[in-house]
Image (cartoon, rainbow, N blue to C red; front, side):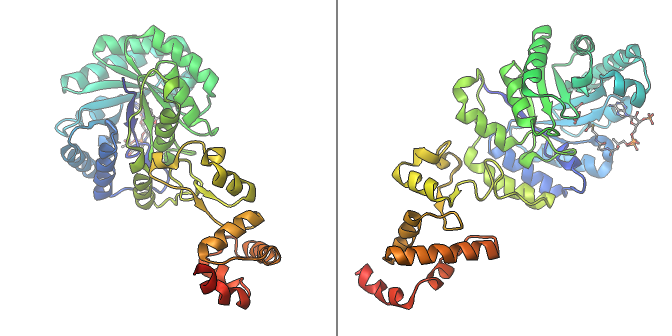
Length: 382
Ligand SMILES: CC(=O)SCCNC(=O)CCNC(=O)[C@H](O)C(C)(C)COP(=O)(O)OP(=O)(O)OC[C@H]1O[C@@H](n2cnc3c(N)ncnc32)[C@H](O)[C@@H]1OP(=O)(O)O
Ligand SMILES: O=C(O)CCC(=O)C(=O)O
């Protein structure tokens, strides 16, 4: 069985301050995610206006098989706006913590449960599958979660979303809470994690281990504040540790870097070179001992085969190069150096790296060679 990835790049991801996708960008991202095997997409908020609703409608039309979901407040007007857009699902969101219920919505728990019942029934009448979005669930009393889930189920919901809205949990707490929630309801349980403590991916994986049936992700971890659980991180971790899970995540891992670049461009957010799974430099090695170890056996310094992501190792020279790496690299370029020459070049590379804060190009490496060596190149190659 597969875990359902409900990717919310186009909803929570777009809530990243300053990020605003065009319609074409949203369609391109949705299509790329579908092609990579993502089966559910949360694609927008109908209450944002007619322009957004038309975008939602066009995304629904463009997709072949992925299920689409819209996000709505638990309010009749918002729910009505989903009508005729071609959506499969709606997430009806309402804060379930006392903190947000009292000081944001200013309603009693009884009023909240009444709203849940009315909202879910209305959405069902419109022919939509319903996920109850339990905002701020991680600060709510477990009994409130259970009661809300019970009422939502009776009204026709199929799933509850457990939102760690402020990214406060750690994986151990997440495991316990989700285990308790899944044991108390027949509904599917979806994990929605935020990254305020840098734990969104870990918490999502813990929730999956505890029995969550779906999880929200965003490409590049976009989202409110520190963002959400990154799609690429969840997909890669679940593949590498596939035997630890009772469910599988079968996305096309080789497609992830291009999707990350697409979203990076559309969001105007640069992709860090070291970003897990999709960064440009994650298989680039400079340190002398690592290069020596890799050349003896790649398993010495690889967590998993780069080929899993359609990538390869790249060896570069820099401040941390050992003599063996310098020897190997220059041999590949066609030069045989004496140890004295290697040591001299090592010092030149260190100076270059500190000055320019990058690794030298091949052209620049040629420039470190003494003229006598350059003249011997033809002879060496022959
Ligand atoms: C944790 C999350 O990420 S939740 C998703 C949040 N996403 C966004 O806010 C992005 C898109 N938002 C928008 O475009 C707008 O805020 C809209 C269209 C949703 C609403 O716009 P407006 O009608 O102008 O309302 P505004 O933004 O001021 O919303 C505040 C109202 O929503 C109510 N509200 C907030 N959450 C909910 C909810 N889950 N259910 C019902 N009502 C809610 C507030 O109580 C407040 O109403 P009040 O003044 O009667 O107390
Ligand atoms: O209630 C939900 O659907 C979750 C909303 C959300 O994005 C959050 O709580 O972080």
